[in-house]
Length: 274
Image (cartoon, rainbow, N blue to C red; front, side):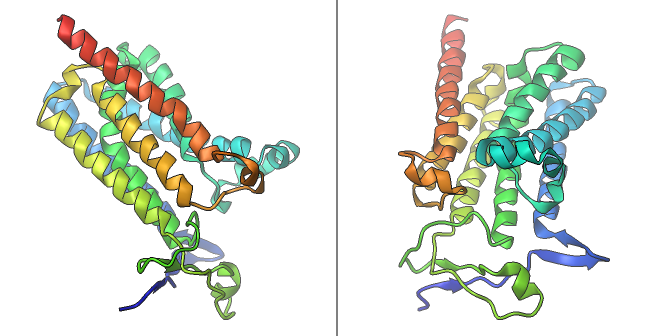
């Protein structure tokens, strides 16, 4: 039995001119497409106006991309990006933060609720988070293809050896591999897929959407709770995190977990009263 996995996947599917089409971008696009199809089923189930779903897609995409990019720039490298603001626009060079994406979606749904649905934000979140676990899992698989966001060295048999000199390797150099490391991209992807399955079951089988905020709260606890634990075996994204008791990803996750607990309590309390 092998005691490690040597990962030599090419991040690019193909190249057009000098621009690479990467698995990461494809994963992102597929996630949004499948997510849209799932939300369409919700719309039919609740007999909601079709224009609302098109607006929801636009608001969510903008909120996700803008929030994730600004989150990466401001949470992890603020001094660099504030000194070089044009670099923030270079999203094709990589650098997206899930916590920033979440905040971006929250802001986007605020405006969506005010301008389009005229319903509560929780009403929208209970629908939006159902496919989000799948989208997040696909994005983490994109990270796996990019040889990034992996964990500490490990002697477990499923440790992955990632290519460190990826750009040079793609130009013909011999690969330089990491020590066998925790494939934290897969750990997160598995947790996110389980969350996706749970949210689908809650919405379509248990009609939990009738208890406003319940699905949203469960999603927040599952996604960000798993993130807190996985971060213990994940490498720090920035050098300044080495001196922190908890890293940036963990500190940013705690408020979302607490919010999830509150929304579950709120939903069950209202259900008990009614």
